[in-house]
Length: 300
Length: 216
Image 1: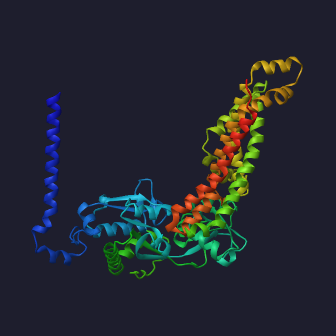
Image 2: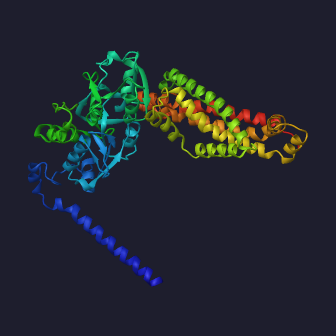
Image 3: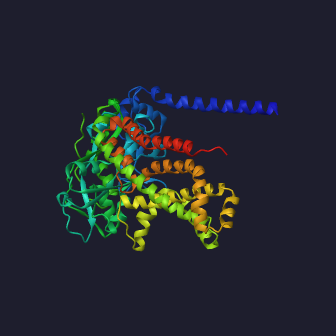
């Protein structure tokens, strides 16, 4: 028994040494060819080709070959986990593009569900490298984390039953029951700017649909893109009026990592230019929403 | 820290709702629970069966599911309860009544069978036996577990936060949304307000227990 065990241990050791040396070999490869630098910068988007400054977040992620991205799992069009367990949507596509620029393949991406209440703390505690989750850029949040982007401009809007034409804009909400999510930006906005509306807060936007259909609430209010997702799924619902707020969606990352933020901003500007942003939009949210102009990146 | 002080009015309005939820639900649960407990010890078998079924169903169902049922499932059958406070009271009180019934039943069972037999021997009816002889003695054993049930109820009111009631927890969520940098402090504030309800309840329980204690 004893010798067997020892032999086993030796085998494990040998295997791990092999693995280690193999890793070492990989890591050294790029430095062996000093001339390769020029070529790689020319190639730009090619896998694993990009070179990053020593010690930067990009270099770390690129070397590890893996990245953890937080997104919504229940947001149609942006981040929605289907029956196959894979999240799909515009946020997810943006995440894949950024990972691709780091030389990370889709298998190397770990998707983590982030909900509105835990996004900042997930970034602060390094549980995720990036958060791409219909994440509105605002100053309060900038106190704890930093934002790259915006990569999309949403706006708060209103959803009602298709046969209810009384409500055409936020001013018509006075005295009406408006469903939204407890502790969300749209809720705060309604309370502050439309105090006449009676806010009915639930746990999730999808919870608002049953009360809306039953006439227990008159309207649902949140970002237009979320509402458009619901309206696209059922004929009896309709989005009313133009968006009445500006919600620039940004990519959340660790506070103070300016190098990483600048790089993500560079990537965004690049994909705004070369059409990859438009492709990502049209294959996801663009199926029910018009294709907008890409927003201007805010390098604060 | 300033955010916590600025948040005071929001805390207070949430606290008031939580307090009302607790008080209404406790009162209704107490009344319902007493009836169910009486049915559970009644001499009639169908009554006992009904009460046992009631207790088992409600006691073993998660509270969130009860809320879910009342808010999302009942309307499918044409019963549309008004959203918010009263639906929450309905859910909380039916759920808690099962626990009240069990606490009261265990108290009744703690009174010796001889007491009930003696009461019946002198010609008291079932109601009189329960009301005049058994319950007054049962109260002593019932109070501590009953206070436990109501402390749990006070905390359970937070489930209503997800179902259109802006009580303490929902108020705390609103606050932390508005001040992301002070989230932890603001949530500590929420806890303090819950303690304002639950700790006095524990103190009352202790006092009542001492008062009704007797040497056997």
